Amino acid sequence: MGTHEMMPLDDKAKRMRELLSSFYSPDPSNSPNSYNTSSKYTSIDDINSISFDPDQYMNILAHKSNLEGLLQKHVQMAAEIKNLDTDLQMLVYENYNKFICATDTIKRMKSNILGMEGNMENLLEKVSVALTYS
Image 1 (cartoon, rainbow, N blue to C red):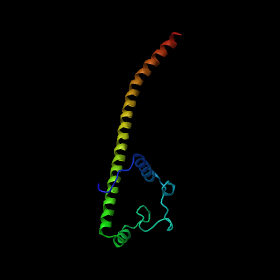
Image 2 (image 1 turned 45 degrees about the horizontal axis):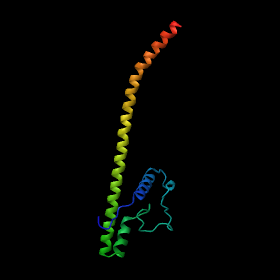
Image 3 (image 1 turned 60 degrees about the vertical axis):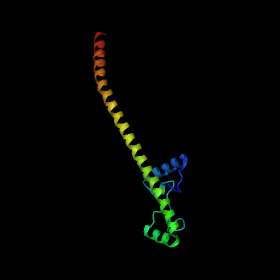
Image 4 (image 1 turned 180 degrees about the horizontal axis):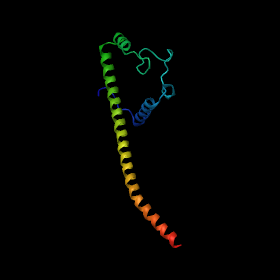
């Protein structure tokens, strides 16, 4: 891992919440961490900006950094990519797990309803018989 350190659990949970919020927000301006595209709040090398240009970013990075700086940036970005991949895998797993649980719940509900139909028919017969004798 090199220079990358693990984030505390609270920071990771907050980051996950922000990722989910940004992913599920239909309008980027509604997101709590929405990125302002005006030139006073974004810079050319702001990788999280909507107006990010990767070619221009690489040109700036190559011109203002030496080889060691570029290698450090590579290690940093590789660690970020690995974290994002891990977060994505975790989200997929959690959603898949929820889907499986929902499917199991629906199966149980279906079997309960099938058994309930017979019980309701028996109840209806008993109520009919009781009403006939009263």
